[in-house]
Length: 399
Image (cartoon, rainbow, N blue to C red):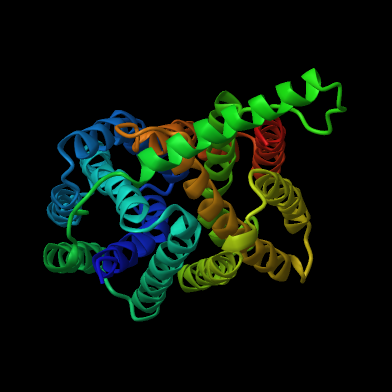
């Protein structure tokens, strides 16, 4: 039941994720795409030190509930203020504050899953959490679709997002409980060190006995892992930050706001299917090697979007199909990465995964819309696809 508050939180932010770029382009028709990149990147840059700070504080104090409540309550207050101004500088400031406090719930969420469940159940529980909250995201997108169809004002839509976060705060205050003991991640770290030492002793003994070696003693390349995370996040945000504008632009697909929401509902639906699949496959995770295939497939799908630039009656169907598959692949990637990260990174650094992805996301959110506005979406798709390939190479080095 502790996840129920996160469900409503993701409803609000799912709605906001598509509404915000459309809203900015509406209030700033001439340079709205540029400001989509600015407001998103400023928020993500502001959140980077916050991720590390909140992750450190929650592990140091061993209190997690208070930071989750802080995130949801601050989102309620700040998004309520967001609804009553169209001044772009003030919108950027408020949204940056939203990002800073929103970061407070990420590391505690990961720690709750890691400490409330045993190591062998991590991947399944990450899959369940992500799938459950992805349903909330999808419902939020449906609410955005309905708001577009029935002409709900921007102010009322933003107040709805704030209200959903208040519901998340109230439910989390009731159902979230700090873990009674914090030791599972430490045990996993000890197991990995002992396992590595055991393999080393075995290989040395074989060498002394003159026996052939059929394996190598290899430790995880954490640097390659971190670089791959940043590359993946960079490519994802270069692609997805301006993508709602691509779908709605008269130069490209020329879809209405309602259809834009519908297309991203299908993308989110692909994610739900992916999380369901990930939850059933946890016993044969296949280590980091499975992740490399997911990244390579995401790169190929990005390059396929180039065909959507051609004037064809099938470009909408192609775009929808690609986005559904991308949602599915992202779900599988997210579950495996979260589990791997909690194995590799020690306590008091639980926020580091969000720092790494935040660095890539911030640069991607800034450069994606700028590239789209200055050069066009062909360059967006090519650059994002190439960076996904860089993430693929980094994960090959890790795995």
